[in-house]
Length: 310
Image (cartoon, rainbow, N blue to C red):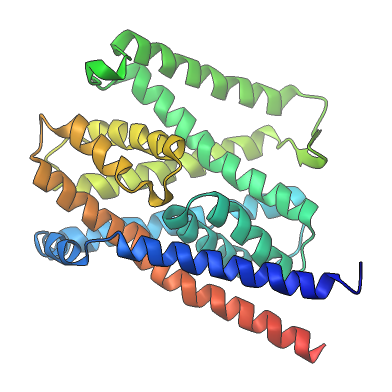
């Protein structure tokens, strides 16, 4: 096995790079770049700068999610490197899907930094759990107290949406009670040990994730030039986020736009909705991806240099 593993690892690494390159080409070809530029021109400079500031704030906050994983697993990768890994994986996650971005890239980059698979699993689970805890809390509160009227063909009326919101809020309460009172702190899932966080850490997860989702909603609210209420934008974004996950389409191409157009058609012209979403994709998806690609290649190059020196 020791003799065969090095060439097998090289082949797997090459296959991984080929897959990523293919997905990036597909993503780039799906974007109407002329329309992106036209959309950006329709927005004022202060509005775009504000949206960029919100996007930067969201990324900085999200890049701290893996620090919670470092705390729970006890690994010693420096803070700056953890945040870089988190940034790269998040940018690829948004554009290429969670399997490639959130999982594959994290395992690859953390392995380059010397972490074993068990530790990386703990970090990935903590980060993904943190992200979706905030979603569940905000979706529960939004659907319960300020539900959005959905199209009849969606087969979910206001009472049903309120009931779903109440159920999501109950799930958050159950999670917090489990973190506060459970005697069993380590759980084994498919051979991996998962550490149940303390109540203080669980509350920090909820706070960080909720603020991050609110920052994204504020970014969209600003790009729609405040012509739609913030609670409405938040509601639509939460519906679009889960629709994108269910659809399993990289970057939720078409899903995000479809949900926003359908749910905001009575309040905003379709052209303005699409213009705002194109600006959003440029600021929050494409620009970070353009920064993440060279950052990842630099990380790989440094790893290769250390291997040659060793």
